[in-house]
Structure formats: C-alpha cells, structure tokens
Length: 376
Image (cartoon, rainbow, N blue to C red; front, side, top):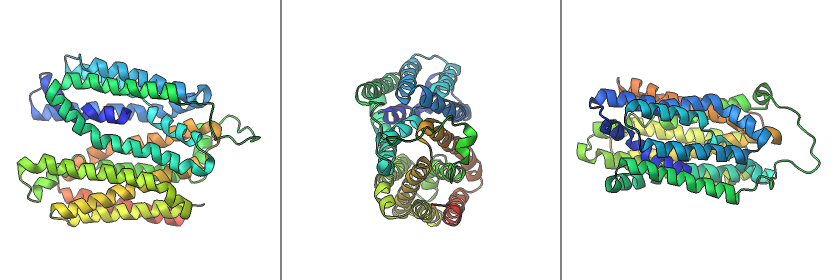
C-alpha cells in the first residue's frame, strides 16, 4: 500500500511544482530533481540507525512511526504554497523514512529460515507492483480531483498500510531465533560489515539499483529518438516502464523457487547476466518490440538478482541484528537510487546509448565478480 501510494503522486511532482508558480522548464527540472533526491539521500544515511532502533525496541513500532509520519507529511503536501515548502516536507520525509528496510527485516523474521527468500521475495514483489499501478491510478485521480487531492489520497494509502501493520503483524510470532539459540550479543555496524559476503552483497545491490534507475531520465528521450511520434512517447515509455516493473515483480516472486534448486551465487550471477543481455538489447534496438523484449530481460534479471542478494545477506545476519543489517543494505540501495538519475542524465546528454552500454558493462562485471568471489 505504501509504495502504491507513493507512486500515486510523485511522478507528477514536476506538474505540481509548476502549479506553485515556477514557470521556467529548467527551474522546474532543478527543483524536481532536488526534491526527489533529498529524501533517499537522507534516508540512506539514517536507515542503519532506524534499523538498530528496530533491533532494540521492535521493528513493528518503528514501521508504525515511519508510516504515521508519511500520513501527516503527505497530507501536508496538499496545502503547501511554495516550492521551498515542498523541499522542506521532502527533507523531513527523509528524516523519518525507513519502513522499507524494516519491512524486509520483518519479512525475514516472520518466516522459517529455509523460507526466508520467499518471504523477502513476497515483500519485494509488492514493492515492484506498487510502482507499476500507482502512476496509472494517480494520473486518473489527479485529472478528476486535482493534484492536491491526490496527495491526500496518498496519505490515505499510508493510513491503510498503518492499520494493516498494526492489526495483522505480530512481532512476537517470529521464526528468526531457533529455540535454544545462543545470544548473539551486541552487534555493531562493523560486525555487520564483517559478515560473510556482506560487503559484496552491498555492492551488488547498489549496482542493481543503479542500473534499474538509470532508465528514468533517458528512456522517454530514447523512445522519441528511435522514431516514435512525440504524442505517443508517454504511452510507449510508460508501457516499457510498466513491463520492467511487472517482470521485476515476477523475478522477485520466483527467486525463492530458484534458490531452492540453485546456489545464491548462480542465481545472482545469472540474474545480472540476464539484465546485461537486456541492456545490450536496448543499446542495439531500434523498434518498440525489441525494447519490450529488453525490458522483460531487465525486469526478470534485476528482480531475481535483487531478492537473491538480500536473501544471501539475510542468511548470515544474526536474528538480533536484522534491522541494522537490512538498514545497511537499504542504504546501499538508496545511494544507487539517488546517484543513478544524475549520472545517467549527464551521460545521456552526450549519447543515450552510452547509458545502456554502461549498464551492460556494469551488469556483466557484477555477474563475473559474484561468480568468482562469492562463497557459499
């Protein structure tokens, strides 16, 4: 519910900033970029801290804290009158966010150890499906009721998510700590980084998120560049983004089954290899059908590799450190999310196909490094 609500309005932030009196296209783009980037940047810095607090005081209460703040802050967005107020609210959201990593930790602890990949995959599937349907719902809602009311609708989505967590999640019914297991003691951030394969998984998650988010600034431009008429660009580009979102959800969903048959190393390397093939097909493509096939490969590959990476890292994190561990992993993901659009936009200004070539090289390198260095 939270991810659907978020994407209900954020794709239309440039339009909202324009309604606040900013008329120059360059200034709208600048304010939009800063407003979109400041939240994940602050969240990346604070996610490990919220994770540690979740380990100490309980993850459910920490998720509820984050969701309450989002209800209030998205409702406040409906009443802002200047772009500075938008930026301020987005900054505060970054300070109080963190439910994403905690929800993954909750999923990891709510399932038996051998079913952890399926539980993590289920959460990440929901995280993918939400952005696939949110913009469509938001576009219709904004057109009928207005953008300001769309922010109130987003607050409503977060309120529903808050009720669901409060009523249905029991943080006492977890399977993370086997009966009679020894206490792990106090776990520091340095301890977390020392876990087997953990730093490697941080790098993999950063790379996967970096490639996944590199298409946002350049794909609509590329679609028009290959000959799609200007009027059809939003529809075609939106369809390609939806294909990536839904096939990514499939990758998350089926990753658990793959991990029951194959080692994490092969699933991660294989997923990165499939994503590399998708990036290469994008670079070589010249029509919508090839780009659609490339979107399928990218979605499936990144989805499966992402869930396998979180699962591999989660398997070595002691039960008492899930919040801190997944918080650090989320920070790596958010750094990729925040940096990729800036770099892709800069590189794409010279030649858009270079962005896809960089994605191809990065995914190929990840596949090789994981295959050769990851230990089971």
